[in-house]
Amino acid sequence: MNIERLSPIGKCTTTWNIRIHHKTIILGIGSYNMDAIKKVEGDKKDHEVKLFALSTCGWCKKTKKLLADMDVEYECIDFDKLDSDEKKEMREELKEHNPSLSFPTIIVDDDCVIIGFKKDEIKEALEG
Image (cartoon, rainbow, N blue to C red; front, side, top):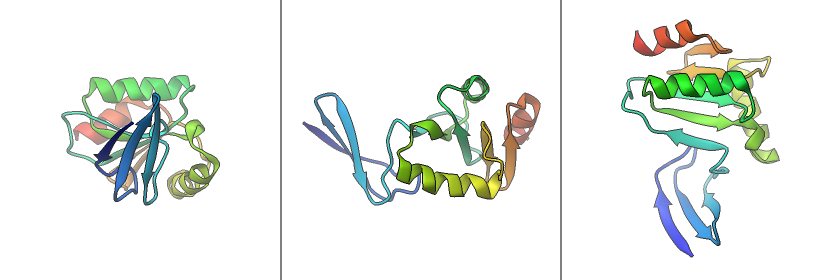
Protein backbone atom coordinates (compact mmCIF):
# COMPACT_ATOMS: atom_id res chain seq x y z
CA MET A 1 0.00 0.00 0.00
CA ASN A 2 1.30 3.44 -0.98
CA ILE A 3 -0.12 6.59 0.65
CA GLU A 4 0.77 10.14 -0.35
CA ARG A 5 -0.73 13.56 0.26
CA LEU A 6 -1.89 15.39 -2.85
CA SER A 7 -2.29 19.06 -3.50
CA PRO A 8 -5.88 20.27 -3.66
CA ILE A 9 -7.99 18.99 -6.55
CA GLY A 10 -11.22 20.67 -7.48
CA LYS A 11 -12.86 21.86 -4.29
CA CYS A 12 -10.87 19.53 -2.06
CA THR A 13 -8.83 21.15 0.66
CA THR A 14 -6.95 18.01 1.59
CA THR A 15 -6.77 14.78 -0.34
CA TRP A 16 -4.89 11.55 0.16
CA ASN A 17 -3.94 9.22 -2.65
CA ILE A 18 -4.05 5.60 -1.51
CA ARG A 19 -2.94 2.90 -3.95
CA ILE A 20 -3.85 -0.68 -3.17
CA HIS A 21 -3.20 -3.33 -5.83
CA HIS A 22 -3.09 -0.78 -8.69
CA LYS A 23 -6.39 0.81 -7.64
CA THR A 24 -6.42 4.44 -6.58
CA ILE A 25 -8.72 5.78 -3.93
CA ILE A 26 -8.95 9.48 -3.17
CA LEU A 27 -10.00 10.41 0.33
CA GLY A 28 -10.61 13.88 1.66
CA ILE A 29 -13.07 16.64 2.26
CA GLY A 30 -15.08 16.93 -0.95
CA SER A 31 -12.92 14.28 -2.60
CA TYR A 32 -13.44 13.27 -6.22
CA ASN A 33 -12.70 10.39 -8.54
CA MET A 34 -9.14 11.10 -9.65
CA ASP A 35 -9.85 9.75 -13.14
CA ALA A 36 -12.78 12.10 -13.58
CA ILE A 37 -11.34 15.35 -12.21
CA LYS A 38 -7.72 16.12 -12.75
CA LYS A 39 -5.34 19.01 -12.98
CA VAL A 40 -3.53 19.01 -16.31
CA GLU A 41 -0.12 20.62 -15.97
CA GLY A 42 1.06 23.31 -18.35
CA ASP A 43 3.58 26.13 -18.38
CA LYS A 44 0.95 28.79 -19.07
CA LYS A 45 -0.77 29.57 -15.78
CA ASP A 46 -2.00 33.11 -16.60
CA HIS A 47 -5.66 32.08 -16.38
CA GLU A 48 -7.73 29.76 -14.25
CA VAL A 49 -9.15 27.33 -16.81
CA LYS A 50 -11.75 24.64 -16.21
CA LEU A 51 -12.88 22.22 -18.92
CA PHE A 52 -16.10 20.23 -18.60
CA ALA A 53 -15.84 17.35 -21.06
CA LEU A 54 -16.92 13.81 -21.90
CA SER A 55 -14.13 11.25 -22.18
CA THR A 56 -15.63 9.83 -25.40
CA CYS A 57 -16.48 13.14 -27.13
CA GLY A 58 -14.46 13.94 -30.26
CA TRP A 59 -14.85 17.73 -29.81
CA CYS A 60 -13.77 17.42 -26.18
CA LYS A 61 -10.66 15.51 -27.29
CA LYS A 62 -9.88 18.28 -29.80
CA THR A 63 -10.27 20.85 -27.02
CA LYS A 64 -7.91 18.90 -24.74
CA LYS A 65 -5.37 18.64 -27.57
CA LEU A 66 -5.59 22.37 -28.28
CA LEU A 67 -5.04 23.21 -24.60
CA ALA A 68 -2.09 20.79 -24.52
CA ASP A 69 -0.63 22.30 -27.72
CA MET A 70 -0.99 25.76 -26.14
CA ASP A 71 0.69 24.39 -22.97
CA VAL A 72 -2.14 25.73 -20.78
CA GLU A 73 -2.63 24.44 -17.25
CA TYR A 74 -6.27 23.55 -16.59
CA GLU A 75 -8.65 21.49 -14.54
CA CYS A 76 -10.43 18.81 -16.55
CA ILE A 77 -13.72 17.29 -15.45
CA ASP A 78 -14.66 14.21 -17.49
CA PHE A 79 -18.35 14.32 -16.65
CA ASP A 80 -19.13 10.76 -17.76
CA LYS A 81 -16.53 9.34 -15.33
CA LEU A 82 -18.04 11.01 -12.25
CA ASP A 83 -20.02 8.96 -9.76
CA SER A 84 -23.65 9.95 -9.16
CA ASP A 85 -22.98 12.29 -6.21
CA GLU A 86 -20.14 14.01 -8.05
CA LYS A 87 -22.30 14.34 -11.17
CA LYS A 88 -25.04 16.04 -9.21
CA GLU A 89 -22.59 18.58 -7.74
CA MET A 90 -20.76 19.21 -11.03
CA ARG A 91 -24.05 19.41 -12.99
CA GLU A 92 -25.10 22.32 -10.76
CA GLU A 93 -21.75 24.05 -11.26
CA LEU A 94 -21.87 23.54 -15.03
CA LYS A 95 -25.51 24.69 -15.22
CA GLU A 96 -24.50 28.08 -13.73
CA HIS A 97 -22.30 28.69 -16.79
CA ASN A 98 -24.02 26.58 -19.45
CA PRO A 99 -27.73 25.84 -18.80
CA SER A 100 -27.85 23.46 -21.79
CA LEU A 101 -25.21 21.23 -20.12
CA SER A 102 -23.41 20.63 -23.43
CA PHE A 103 -19.80 19.60 -23.94
CA PRO A 104 -17.12 20.77 -24.16
CA THR A 105 -17.56 23.80 -21.94
CA ILE A 106 -14.51 25.88 -21.06
CA ILE A 107 -14.60 28.41 -18.24
CA VAL A 108 -11.76 30.94 -18.16
CA ASP A 109 -11.23 32.99 -15.01
CA ASP A 110 -14.80 32.18 -13.93
CA ASP A 111 -16.20 34.86 -16.28
CA CYS A 112 -15.52 33.79 -19.87
CA VAL A 113 -17.51 30.74 -21.02
CA ILE A 114 -16.86 29.00 -24.34
CA ILE A 115 -19.33 26.30 -25.32
CA GLY A 116 -18.20 23.89 -27.99
CA PHE A 117 -14.87 23.56 -29.77
CA LYS A 118 -14.26 27.12 -30.97
CA LYS A 119 -10.55 27.21 -31.63
CA ASP A 120 -10.27 30.94 -32.32
CA GLU A 121 -12.33 31.94 -29.27
CA ILE A 122 -10.30 29.62 -27.04
CA LYS A 123 -7.02 31.04 -28.34
CA GLU A 124 -8.24 34.61 -27.94
CA ALA A 125 -9.41 34.02 -24.38
CA LEU A 126 -6.15 32.37 -23.34
CA GLU A 127 -3.61 34.38 -25.29
CA GLY A 128 -5.24 37.81 -24.98
